[in-house]
Every structure is written in structure tokens, then in C-alpha cells.
Amino acid sequence: MSATESSKPTPPVPAPPAVPLPRKIPTPATVAPSAPATASSSDAAAWGRVAEDGTVEVREGESWRVVGQYPDGTPDEALAYFVRKYEDIAFKVTALEQRHEAGGASAGDLVKQAAHLNDEATDAAAVGDLAGLRERLAALTASLSEATAEEAQQAKEQLDRAIADRTALVEKAEAIAARDLSKVQWKQVTAELNELFESWQSQQQNGPRLSKGVSQQLWKRFRDARSVVDKQRRAFYSELDDAHKTARDAKTRLIERAEALAPRGTDGIPAYRSLLDEWKAAGRAGRKADDALWARFKAAGDALYAARAEQAAAEEADSAPKIEARQALLEEAKAVGDEPNIKRARALLTRIQRDWDEVGRIFPRDKERALDDRLRAIEQALKAREDVDWKKNNPETKARANDMSSQLVEAIEKLEAELAAAEKAGDKKAAKEAADALEARRAWLNALGG
Image (cartoon, rainbow, N blue to C red; front, side, top):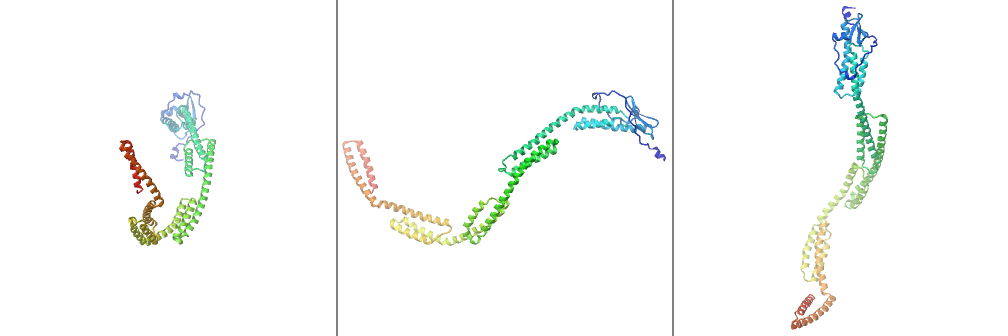
């Protein structure tokens, strides 16, 4: 062995711990956290000693316990080595105390760490105030007891709230499943159920962990409700797909029939209108399919109506001279109203009507109706004149008028005599009554042409 190699210390050999003498343990309230011991020679001498053979012991109370051997080093090196072991444990205790004072850490976790450190400080192969570390850990554990109880209560309350929240989600899902699903809006129902499922996943990931029994029971209820809704939704969309296919096939056949009307031109329009009624009764084929099918069906109809528009334009061009001819006849017909002789007026109108019919049909029809309405007004005016003339010259009417005239003449002569007698007698009241009656009879007689 070289000189350099012989100078390196041999790793110490831990010895079995000795049973320490009984000592009085201070209460937690009297123990305050302290900083870890330093590796000073005075501290090392106070808590440890080294035998000539390199055996290192630590003082615990009134007894000494062997913690190991350090045969190839000086006594100071031996003590320093085991003091560092102590300082490692003391550092952990101090850090645990500081975490408790800072707050935010789980008291239950800190209690577990304190118990682990207490085991580590018991019979540790270290030199230092191990009993003091255990006392500090005991005080820390006592201080954490109340916090642990509060945490347990809070955890129970959080668990109860989580169960209540999860149960509320289940009840909402079951309420959806209990609806009359034949009358719902499936997009809305699906959105509601998806929102509930997302909330379920969020609570499961972020909330407290439920017991297996409660979690499985609630999930089974939620899953069963979803299954009911999903089954009804699949059935609805299956039926809807069948209905869409039926409508799509029917409309495809209607398109083929509509397209076959193209060679008929304008004459195919009535048949196309019938097909349009069938189209409306065929039902929905889905938005995209309906839009595409309607575009084809409408294109077939547009071809027919385009042919009619061309025909109407040609007919309107042909009707231009006819319109001028009828407008000329209307100008001539103005003389009917100016003719005092009703028979000659009727003869003139009859000839105009005959010429009117010979002109033929006019397109568009609205222009023809406008011209017809103007001639009809002349016809009605002449008819009204003829009715008046007939009533005036009717023999029966004349006979009745002559009879009435005779009666009025007699009444007038009688009233004239009564008026003269009343005036002669100076009876003003009787004279006035006779004069009023006489005036009325004379007016009636004038109306009869007497």
C-alpha cells in the first residue's frame, strides 16, 4: 500500500445500537424548533467520543451508544463524519418545520414525513443531539394533529360535495332520458348530454377521488341514461335516413319526368305544375340533397317557362296591330254616347262589336282585358239609356201614368176650389194646407209629363 493510499480513511463500520437509558421527554409545547447542529469540535465533544480503536459513540441521555468505527482517521475526522450524518437529519427536520410554518402543504403528508424522520433519528449512526431532534419532531407532530383533523374534515366535505355534484349530473342525464324522445330536438338534446359528460370528466379528473363503490354506482346510472338517449337517437336518425332516401328516390323520379317535358315546351307547363304538387308532398331528403335535387327540378321548369316567355313575346309582337285596331274602334265608339237616337246608337255599337271580335285575340291578356273594359263601359252606358227609354215608352207604364195623371188633375181641381173657398172665408190655416197639397200634386203631375 502506498503512503497516499494509507492516508485515506477507511469507511466507518456502523455498530449495533445500544439501548439508551431512560430519560424524561419534554412535552411538545415546551420544545421549540431549532437550527441543525454545526460540526464544531465543542459540539462533537459534547455529543460524541472516539475510542483508540476508532470506535465512535454518541451520548444519549446518561448512556453512550456505539454508532460505528472510523479506524483509519483521526478522532476529529471520525467525529466530523458522524456529525455530518446528524446534520443531514437535522436539516430535514428544520425543512419540515419551515414547510409547516409556511403553510400550503398537506398536514397529513407532513405527519408521515415527521414519522419517517423520527424513525431515521432513532438509533441513527450519527453524532449530535438526536434526542432533541426527536423532541422537535414530537412537537411538530402534535402541532400537525389539529391541522390533520381539519384536513380530514375538509376532505370529507369535499367528497360529499363531489358526490352531490356527480349525483346532480346523473339526475340531469336521467331527466333527459325520461323525456318523450320522439318529440325532442336532437341537436339540443345531444348538446345537453355532451355538456353533462364533459362536466363528469372534469369532476373526475379535477375533483376528489370517490370510493370505488359510489363511483361505479353513479357511473352506471349515468351510462344507462346515456344509453337510453343514444338508442333513441340512433333509431331516430335511422328512420330519418330511410325517410330521406325515400324522398330522394321519389324526387329523382319527378326530376326525370320533369326533364322529359322539355320537348313539349309551353304545353308541358300544366304537367310540370302537377309534378310540383307531387314534389311538395314528397318530403325532405336532407338539406344538401334537397338543394341539389331542387336545382335540377327547377332547371327543368325554367326551360318550359322560358319557352312560354318566348311564345308570349312572339304573340305580343303579333298583337301590336290588333291593339291599334281596337284602339281605333274605341275612338269610333265614343260617338255612341253622343248619338241622341238610341236606335242609331245601338246599330253603331253593334257594328263596332262585330269588328271588335273580328280583330281576334290579343296578348298579353292583361292588355286585352284593359281594352275590353273600356268597350264594356260604353256598352253599359248605352244599356242604361235603353232601360230608361223602355220604362218611359212602355204601354203599360204609359197607361198607369195616364191613369195617375187623371187622378192628379181631378185632385188639383178640387184643391184649387178648396183654396179659393178658404181664402174667401179668410181661413188662413185651411188655405195654407190646400196650397201645400196643391203644390205637391202639381209636382207629381209634372213628373209624369202632364
